[in-house]
Length: 380
Ligand SMILES: *Cc1c(COP(=O)(O)O)cnc(C)c1O
Picture 1 (cartoon, rainbow, N blue to C red):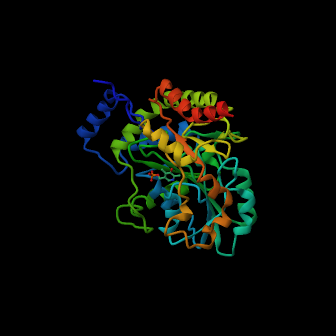
Picture 2: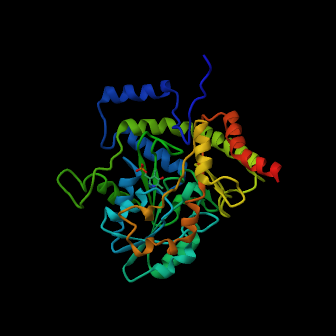
Picture 3: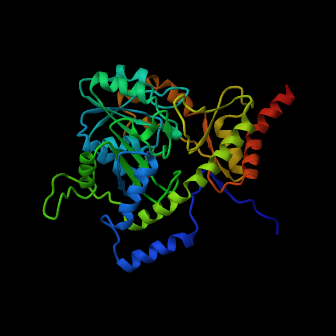
């Protein structure tokens, strides 16, 4: 029997050795303390806060509910400036709060919200900016804060991609009013499902903890229209174990990123994202490449080619959020308003990157991507 090459997905969840998790599970089974702030929840929250270097953090069941609660905590209403170039949960959190998204174009170098284009989109109804550290690369946090200060807007960061990312003054999560992390299975750091909301002071954290627990502020007191966004003990215990493996995970991701860059730099028509100027610590969450006119294949043809070799590259982010039915009739969703995002969404392809991906496979993928450009070179 010939050996079938295994399908290589764009990402694959990191799981610690099962035997490291089992003692935690035994404790959960013994205590029967399953959720509502058990010992592992409290420990994970404290260790995470220290590891990330943030003042306060609240664990959540997932990032989407955390985003919904972040907007509630800041009492955001009316219109919010946001990016079309993200996962759809970013904008959905606005609609769940009855807020109107206003899409603003991204910067061509970072693919993050372009601060220079925000002011033109502000109206008397604008109350906040919801930005995304896309692929884990920090937004221009100072540029965004400057606009926010000028127009008295709140700033929320969807930091679902930005676990562990640092800029010149420490964690990128300390910028803006609130930041949201995702611990979904596909992310750099996972607890199967999970998320967190980073806040700046204990009062804010206390209110956020009420919001994720139905608004309960005590046994008989309900102070807000809260929701159920609590993280249970199983996820918290897994999070504690995952933290011990974080350095390994980041080392592996870095090695893959480095190898792709070595193999693909200088290939005609392929652009890779560079670290942003203030970026000190990256997490190598994704490996997007952008194809320009010099590359002989279209993005979709290259995607099909890789898939025919069982390499499941993905078109993140395509389509744009602003192209989905619940958004496309907004005036700000027009292509003419979003030329950079509209262009990139047609040219981007994310290549596989995850801790267990063998370097030989990375070389094979890079060769498959580079080969069409080499063939063209030889033919010329
Ligand atoms: C994954 C992701 C989310 C949603 O996270 P969940 O934890 O699955 O709810 C939100 N925003 C972005 C940018 C994401 O990539």
